Amino acid sequence: MRKPKLRELGEAIRALIKGPYTTKFPFKPAEICPEFKGFPEFQEEGCVLCGGCAQLCPTHTIKVFDKPEEGKRVMFRDYGNCMVCGQCQLYCLTGEGIVMTNEFDKTTFDKSVIHEEIEDELVFCESCGAIITSKKHMNWIADRLGELAYANPTFFVWKGYEMGLADKDSGKNHPGLWREDAMRILCADCRRNLVYKEDWEG
Image (cartoon, rainbow, N blue to C red; front, side, top):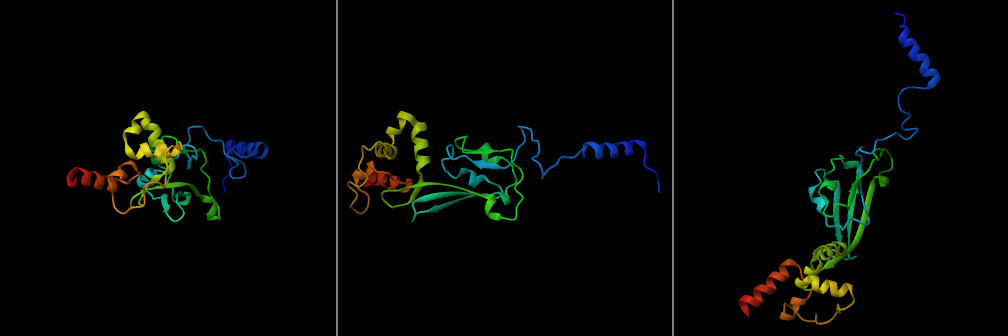
């Protein structure tokens, strides 16, 4: 058996006195530099639940669940499937809806704690009832457009609803699309059908 070298013996003695050179993780939190990229996290204030991050997530970690019967949209994230690529933050519509944190340790036997959800109300087409988007997304687009929002009938009516200047229940008790439906919140299909009817069928 070879005798240990003096250097190795010295390191062993120093380790006994000062403790090991390695970190104390997971018994003590690891020291992380600010630039370290950990798991992403939804930001309640910045996320408009547009669903863009779910469409580009390469591992389908983020999912969008629309619940029309409850009138809400749920954004769901499973950290157990995330590969921390950062695409969700890079291409976030608002730039503030999802942020890469320093947290990297999600090790657990309880799968319920590695899930994250946020939700918002849905906006429906007032003609066919199709889902348009979330309420926060509508408000974000309207604010982004500024005064130009009033040039779009859907956003013109939407801003009227938000300011309490428009009645949500007036003039909607008829089948099909009428000329007065131009000033209603419509999905893209109904808006196109209405314009086609007005321009070509008279």
